[in-house]
Image (cartoon, rainbow, N blue to C red):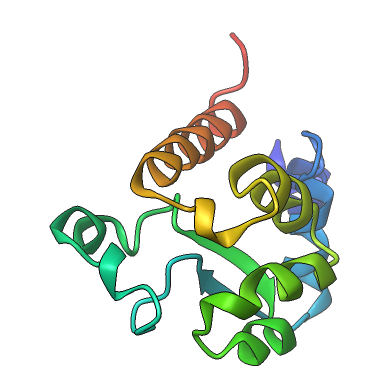
Length: 131
């Protein structure tokens, strides 16, 4: 049972989740980063109705160290540089390399939708492991 193993052991069951354990139990300073920011004017062209529906979707958010998130200050041109400084593989590998391919200008609603599905699949697989 979860109680006998400890919650930390449960989070360590899958690759990458040991990072989550460190974040949750270390008292670290992290924020939720919006990949396409809620208020940034630089990407006003991307702010159509479709984006407004998805701005807070799990595909458009990522855990990021607070000092990095605060350094970005909703400026799209700073995002890749700050993402590269992150110690979290979910930012450096899954987001920066896989989704953005190293360039924030690549971020679009299609990539957000694909990332949403990958995140939902990862959560589902964690909650309901292979039967």
